[in-house]
Image (cartoon, rainbow over all chains, first blue to last red; front, side, top):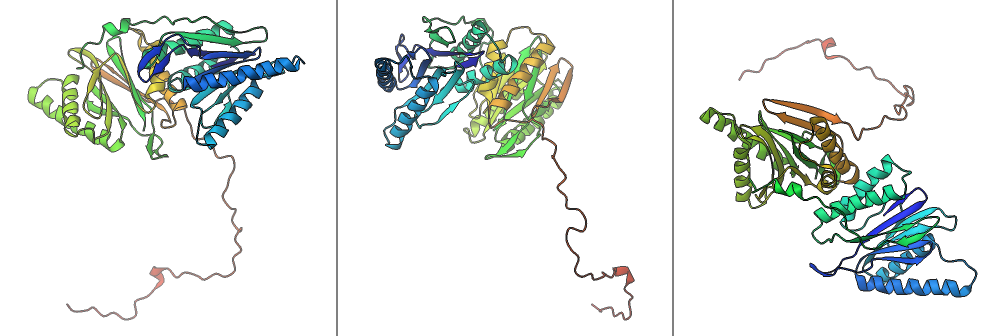
Length: 208
Length: 234
């Protein structure tokens, strides 16, 4: 998940595992909450569905008020932090790591992370699970070199990260969606795959 | 924990390591040597317990020298590999040495990785240690077959830097050793990533800060005169 030039890009795989079984290969882990926020969920999918239901109801409540103001990304991030920390304190956590990608009321990009234990912070690049070991170094480097990158460049960086994650994470699938929140549009793409190159594999043979 | 990586490119091997040794969460040695000499044409990077890597590589280095004297030939990387894995397997993983072994011998360039339990891998690029995932992400992204030397050195340096910057158990500088047929080039450091900053001010107290209340003059030993001498009979 990466913040670039007044927009935010977020990506998540479409795999729902059951232990080490790749049980559901076409699930949505990105949710468009409203025009200013997309959230991505990692961890228990049932708990994520519960949070999605609550957020959907929140958006409906915002609409019903009728003043045209919807909760922005920092507000949703804060709400999620409160909920998750509260559940952790009651020893009944929602076993998720959520990434909140969006923009605030001023239109500035916002990227936040909330954990099952209530850890919450805002950063320019954020990753969960295996991604924090593999994708985060790559994203940080890309941001250091080119802090003002455009949509396509950011998507390319995310695709590179996802390709390496598919190479190195056993419990991954080469199928993901990319969501973008920008001044104009907030959308989640169709599922896509990264091009992989396994030609290196032909070289090594044996173990000594 | 610390980490090391190696990469085989175009008939040579570049091996590189970060420069940190930690004791729990304290950095013990800010700039230690992690690329160990095994033979003139074989070097080994060690991750894991520092003592284990140091002594294991020293032991194998001496065995390789003895083998060289006995056979009259330059040692092969595969011999060092066999010695390492048979040694480590015997200790069932209690010797926590995760090693990346590389070198160029008569059969060509060779790159292997040895795990603490004794298993080995033969691969074009390898990483070990706590920062290995960050470094591996760089390799998986940018490794190509038949790279030029400068390109490979840059890639390997970037991989170590990814570990140094993103992993808490790694740090300090990048050392690179390039092993070619017949010669070895050591860059120590290749790149200084984390440098201890300069002290902002002078914190020494000026003379006279402590008020002198009393002085006694110390008599030097040479000023003493021997007045009476008696040597004890044994």
